[in-house]
Amino acid sequence: MQFRDLQKQYQKLKPDIDTVVTKVINTGNFISGQQVSDLEERLAEYVGVKYCITCGNGTDALSLALMTWNIGPGDAVFVPDFTFFASGEVVAFEGAIPVFVDIDEDTFNMSPASLDEAIQIVKKEGKLIPKAIIAVDLFGQPADYSGIRKVAEKYGLLLLEDGAQGFGGQMDGCKACSLGDISTTSFFPAKPLGCYGDGGAVFTNNEEWAGLLKSYRIHGKGLDKYDNVRVGMNSRLDTLQAAILQVKLKAFCDYELENVNKVAARYTQNLEGLVKLPIIKKGYYSSWAQYSILLKDEKERNGLQVYLKEHEIPSMIYYPKTMHQQRAFQGMNCVKVKLTVSENVCQRVLALPLHPYLEPQEQDRVISCIEDFMENKSKEEKQNLVF
Image (cartoon, rainbow, N blue to C red; front, side, top):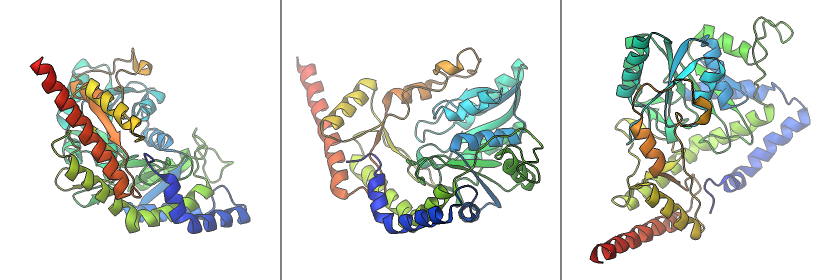
């Protein structure tokens, strides 16, 4: 059993993928081919924004957004404490300070209340200038943008949506990657929409920002690549990856997104009452980058993971350490508020196998193992009480 079965996906899409890859190889246009601009148009249309600018990976996408906003030394950018390292790394890379914000346990996403508190503390200290918020659509469900947007407008902050895991999700009918002033995503192979290598994209409705993003991603180019008007980076999506993503995007829209939601719903139906399950808020739709459950404590989480491994069932811990606990951020004064929910979730979270091609019998094995583990644990606890 695979945690996310890319081989099975390839076998399903093999004829179409092989055709488009062969076409790119035969034409020899490996950089900035027509497939790249075609993909950008399709992605912008799907998400519902005016501009999509592809790039080399999801981390670069975040960096490009911060460069466009001129984020730098002396600025504070507010980032959820429970997320992948890149969400905070890009802030520090620009010379700014990532200020970490606690999350909501039910959704794993940024808490607007914690965000508001962190901003107030930074403003009161007067050492940093609050500039932007990076809200992450963790595990596939968009963050609470109605609440976060209110906080952003209250303090005049820019809102960046990190939709690396959220592509395909929705909030009140609006698709992920359209919910920030600038939004980004990643095409890392294991993401909801992934390529066969690295890739990323930036989305916006702002024409000026779109122009800057296009410049920054190719060495700060002006009229052409030999006319450099600003210092940028080299971050282009390869033509091969764009061609593959066009095939995958069609499958994603036609059936993959629907199928992965069916798999997630089956987990929810069968695991109710055994463990704490992820909650999809009313008006929200998840693309289910991961199906993450919460156990009682770290001992129970680790015990279940070992038990699943003994039965040849893969699982993953996203994430074993909070952002503020990462050594790279020590000494930056990134902590302004209590981050107890994030710390607690790191000790209890466990992600189960999930993908659009997961067979019912495979999922039954996962569910049965969890049922058996919890039943055995309950028996042991009762015996300990007796003795």
